Length: 114
Length: 114
Image (cartoon, rainbow over all chains, first blue to last red):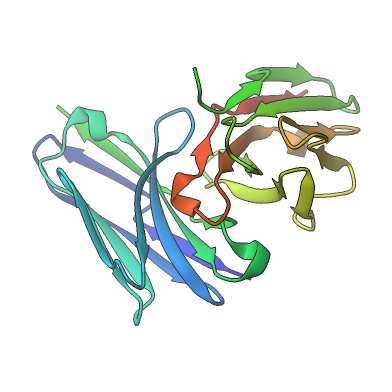
């Protein structure tokens, strides 16, 4: 059974702070790890990390994957109130019909105060 | 709007009733996924289709749950004899085959069982 554990479960910061969200995983035949942002609606895709792409960056958000230690982090610098959301981590297996089938963690609730 | 759509957005039903939800994927996507999300948890995979073929249904929560995608376009998820524990958000997503990072989620159907 694949497993994804995120920490912390919730985080409260002030605008301008930098936050680090953690995701550890156990998966048979790992293919990719994905990060999503969810604001009271559907999850929206942020990053996908694979063996060939272990570091991604987009604006104030960045993520790295440590395949040896089986974890990933999502960093958000200079946080804004619009970053307040649930951040979800998910893993994907490789092989046959497993492609695309995601196992999610429970999420980290980030609250950014003005 | 060319995104994934789901109908209805909210459903309130009494215990023991049957409910059916519909998902319309992005038109050129041949994979369609159903997830369930309960409060404070990440989405949980239920089943998925490639075109009209249901590739896995072992994760459907019980034999009260069934899903169809009769012509490889829209899909329906039916829950028979609903129970209070079925109350959750039911999310649909679609993607190109093998491309997890293009898995786009719909807005979800929130089910409340009284």
